[in-house]
Image (cartoon, rainbow, N blue to C red; front, side, top):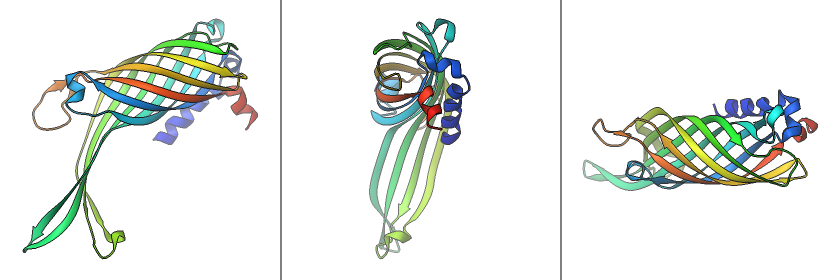
Length: 225
């Protein structure tokens, strides 16, 4: 799935060669994301992740407007607990591993200059499809040979919802081929059923992101093919 999304985003730019002269690029970035508000803090922790996006300026108004499409993943929870289970008085060690992943596929407009300038501030608004997944695995350890450990999925729960983000950033353009991008985002998910514990509570998680990335122009990508 991730490979398909990556190829689709790159092809968005390569399919429209006239856009590249107006600052079109594909980029990767690292993310630090922190929960904001009670709904998010109760069910997730600050986490790190990464993403890829394409910026496709609209030729007639490339100094003002571009379209953005992207995909990202953040690990919101990674927990490991060692314990013992007794069978006929004999202790069997095991490890319970829990992970919570946050996936986001987004699309929207970006306002800001996309020409040949070095400093290119921008702001954007995106609508998003958001997927939360929490999974718990039990690993039964083999003391004689770690390669013989047995892993079994104890529980897995996936919730899909929609959301949006507001972003502000600064793009530094080097030689119209390579650019760095740093920025912040506010994100919110809509009407998400509680993903941990029992009950039918509906929550509306909010987050703040700080990201740092690097982008390559579509012209450079085509030249290297």
